[in-house]
Length: 328
Length: 279
Image (cartoon, rainbow over all chains, first blue to last red; front, side, top):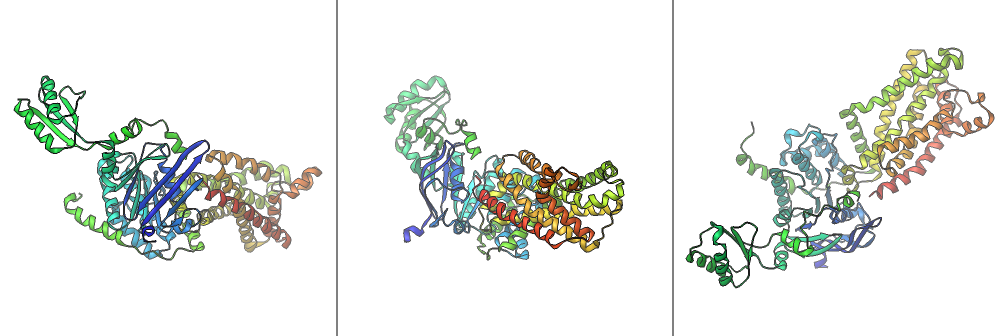
């Protein structure tokens, strides 16, 4: 029982089809309480459909789906009492003002008129929307709308919040604000399930990531584990003079003991390795042989590389299935 | 002038954390209070988008003037005479036509993300629709007031007095509330607001014209008289006419109430089924 009560979301063999499209095709997830769990994948991968099933908006065709131990079909109301959904498209009423939107939600949740206004103002202050409280949401910027959207989801701080592409289309500053909010939510003990197409977003926020493609989980783990499963990191070196590249290649492959990859930039080359000691030695050898370098870096592979390795294509390139998810 | 972010950032973060730390979960709103809250939302939308009242103001004026002065003389000998017969019918026709917008509004609403939020909340789910219909009832009441006031200006003199007029408007509202559930079904089945409007027209035209709104059915061929006699709109118009002119029979009103109840019993559960399973 103890290990069970630790679990916020558990799905097994989750399938959801729309006509002939298997939007979600056998997804198994286990999300522990208090963590940020990222669903990462391109458009049409099945992320939104998965979230909609978890938020009791869609009935799964097969498989079991439990949120805090409650079945999303049989005990939908118990689930709804503990989760909040922030949809991909603003789930606030554009004709109403920011204040009215929050009061509406608060009233629906059972706050009195007075409490509703107090809580709404508290949230508007906290989200930097106090000045815009009396304006219609249709006149908000994308970032303000997103913040109001999240504020509406935490009128009663939920135990679990679903954020469907929370930063899609936001400028970098608004994006940082949303990230800040997510971190504050987690610090307060809320479990977060977010979807994203941005690899760095998943890397920044998520404790664990499931990579989803064509309705299936193709990889799962902590960001570091995922990167490790792809293989070692790489040393990138940039030379001052491209003519030195053959010489630099000889030195690096000799000291590192691995083949050197020549990049399209004629002054750059890289080698797969994650041993900092050997790298330090190799760089020292380069300078001893009189090859000046302008820049070097040693890093784990990016999630882009992870996706490329897992699927054989880059995440961004796949826009062909856009419409499927939209239809869902 | 906005203060530099560096000085506001810590307090901003503090307010954020304190706002998030509130874990108070009130007793959930009951069905009535949730419905009224959604009704409040509908009224707010009227306040913010008053253009949508065009249909409840322009329609009634247009219909009343058009039918009274274009056809009144030909049908009843004089426009003044015809107005006494027509006005209760025009009231019904106006409001029944406006019910159509309920389906269109729902269709527009449901396709937006905000309904996803409502559906994922622990509230009595029919409240979202009942509340919308309550808001619509306010629109119907406005349209009714337009028709009645215009009628009084033009020379309509109801023998049933204020009570008769108020009761007849109330009856029209009850019927419209029932009929609206049929449009919410269409609003959830059809894909676009326009197709909802077209489909509603398809029902509304025969329903309102093959009735006793404009002429006495006795002037019609027998077969048509039978059809018109079976039309629920005819029953409603008879009851409204009776109430306004003080000649109503109780059974006329009972009929209308039964029809309204039947509409709710059939279409409300269907609407809710579609609403719950909306993908």
